[in-house]
Amino acid sequence: MPFSDMPFPDVLLRGISNESDIFDGQVLAQVFQFNPPKEPREDNHNECSINWKDEDCAIDLILHERKVSGQIKYSGGVAILSKEEIDKLRTRRFASVRLDYERRAIEGNDFHGNILLHKDTTEAVRRLISGVIAYDCVMEVIPPRQIAPQP
Amino acid sequence: MIVNTASRECINKYYSGNYRSIHLPYIQELPSNINIFKDLENVNTHSVPLKLNEQVVSFLDSFKEILISYNNSRQLSNNLPPLAVNILEDGATLIEWIFPDFRIGFSLENKVSASSWYLITNNKFKESLRSELFDPSEPQELLSSIVAFALQNS
Image 1 (cartoon, rainbow over the protein chains, first blue to last red):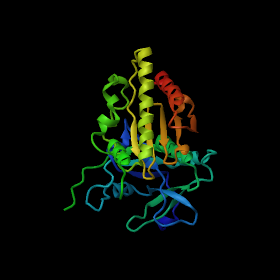
Image 2 (image 1 turned 90 degrees about the vertical axis):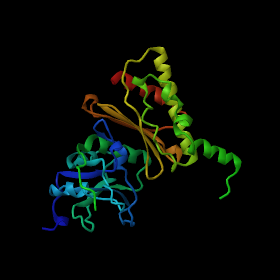
Image 3 (image 1 turned 180 degrees about the horizontal axis):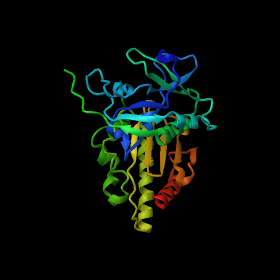
Image 4 (image 1 turned 135 degrees about the horizontal axis):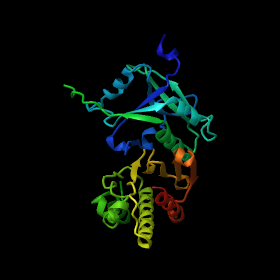
């Protein structure tokens, strides 16, 4: 079965760009901001890029991702998020009808997807939703592994 | 680009030189256990519009005044966590104050009237949420109540 047709797993993954994005074991809300997509979407959603943890190697895919410069992209590690908590957040009045998620495979990454937020959402609600995702939905942070530098 | 003298002075004040000595002289003024500004030295504000940057500095100044006021009235023994200040991709400044049982966020937006704050708690406080707009140029009342909550519950 292609990944695109698979049911959503219980866990989502989000790369953390910097160690400073983690405070006392808690991930900062800035890690979960929603940004306009590179290409306009018909459904008018902004995106927060994630990987679905269909397999354990989805974590390694993020941890090994590199910038154009060759440096490790997510030097803060990977945040493990609970889909159940995201669904719980979606039942909140301020988030319902605005917050969603999807699979959207990209080249070289079948696990890729997005948490989605309608672009007409006010700044205040956007910040609150990012804060709740950071506080309630993150179950664990996997630190970056020692990976040999690219030749 | 033509920059008049006044603008240049303003830009120099807010964008160049020693960020710490210009923006955060109060880093040395507070006792270390309540010095919530100690992690702000390396915040890069170069991408922040001048007006918003002024609002952020003014907001942090108000925060400092309230902490000093509390500390003067009763020497505080709490250990308050430092603020985390980050510039978001859309240019807003997000200030987070993270405690074990709750987290507080202040979002200072480019459109100042859209600035907001939130409180998110865990089950110790019945997993309550609160979010409201606020005026960053007059944050004293809000900050005073938030500092009181933080001191009482940290």
